[in-house]
Length: 320
Ligand SMILES: [Zn+2]
Image 1 (tube, rainbow, N blue to C red):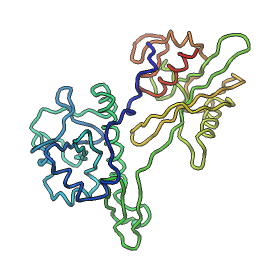
Image 2 (image 1 turned 120 degrees about the vertical axis):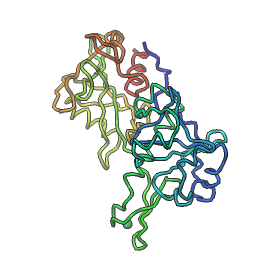
Image 3 (image 1 turned 90 degrees about the vertical axis):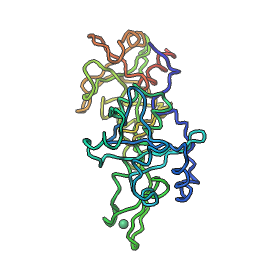
Image 4 (image 1 turned 135 degrees about the horizontal axis):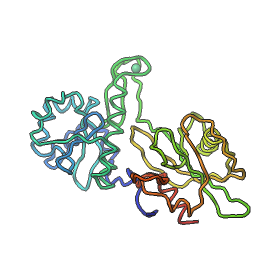
């Protein structure tokens, strides 16, 4: 059941982001015009699949979408440059504004729309990383079409990697945001008996799904302070030896999960948080007896493969 070597989803990015070159609109247009250029259409955070393959616009088919003048397209928030895969330029385009009934006229193929989370079952780790990136960047562009300072319309620059206010008095420039989330496995070693880890049933998860604690980092807070505060708030424990383990982009739409281990001396759990239904201490052997995510039985379930929660638990099991 446990395979700590398995990659976390969204962590295997193969694209060269060529961040120096994407500042140049002429260079971007030359990439778009390349025969092998690929454009990934995105519609309301979902992607198109033909049977089980991702649908990509390339060759002549990309011009079905790029009907308006290309120069203006790269300044809108709809088209973003993701990077170069080997020698293939890859873009993503938000086509949410096209009416669903119109889609079959735009694409002749028999397409199925699959939301980002569900694409994980259909894609490699490498492809999922690119789709996550596309979702994250397009969502950010869509959310920033107007300046937060003066309310004027904005324009996208750098292939959608920065946005500037078009008001000449303001010219405010903003960059994509990432929302840090700390996620932590807390352990307790009783004087007599095996070490235990704390796993919780989260309110938004199905019954009997036990996972690590997690929460957004507050403004002006270190990651370590975030871990200490979240554990205290969610289950009333004081933790120490907060140790960083691994990170995972979580593009729903723009989080970065930062995984930690932490220890406590006092195992008394006090749940004072709406988001936690239950929390318990488990030995490694008890966790090894958990059912898999998605199993339909009465046992506790381990988190989904590919999640950083699963990685933290699997790595902890290896050591214990
Ligand atoms: Zn402005």
